[in-house]
Image (cartoon, rainbow, N blue to C red):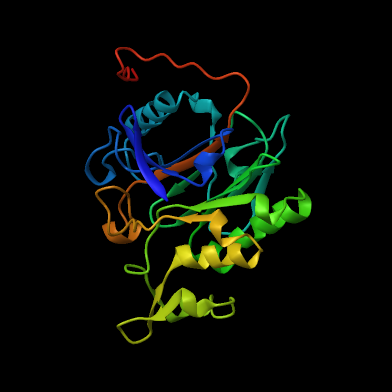
Length: 284
């Protein structure tokens, strides 16, 4: 189950599955609570989609203030719609340059690092080993889903870190639903070899078109890795249908912002961020 909650002005969803883990902070953010305007209204966190940089900075500032996480402890990827996985060690340097961040998933056991996925229809998938305290965030658009990136991350936890499938919890956040995601035949062809594709790929109303359920495709990948069904939490919210809550690339016609989804392992020393009268001071 996903529950809508709020910190200061930031409205976001939490997975009841992941909320059981007291060592975690996580949020599937909405588009609400920021300062951006127009097509980017209001909590746009992307600098690359046409919004004013000053507004995007203020949005990140609001997010950091709300969750008491310094801005430099949020880590984003370039998200290139592939299946490469960025592994961050518990200690030491990990970041070289923005050009080197061409990945679509992060796996780490490092504390006090909020690993992020930006979305505007693609599927954000959170994966947690609740015993070993290892987390992963996955950006699964249709290309990444066709490459089975989510399954590859789960296999990595099991094979490299020795995670037990029964200890792995997963949450599949808001994304475009089957109701709104019509794809052409070449896109559909990328899924025909996946197991149980009839559960997430359906003939469309128009000739040569198909309706694709990305969330279900990722859920099936997780199930096929041996994760118990009761360990998988899936949002039933469609980002295209609910543009009052979310940015949607498909629903907007391509001009829109990005919401952020993040997860962090809490460290021993909590961060302290100053607020004044429960309000956010503006960035000068």
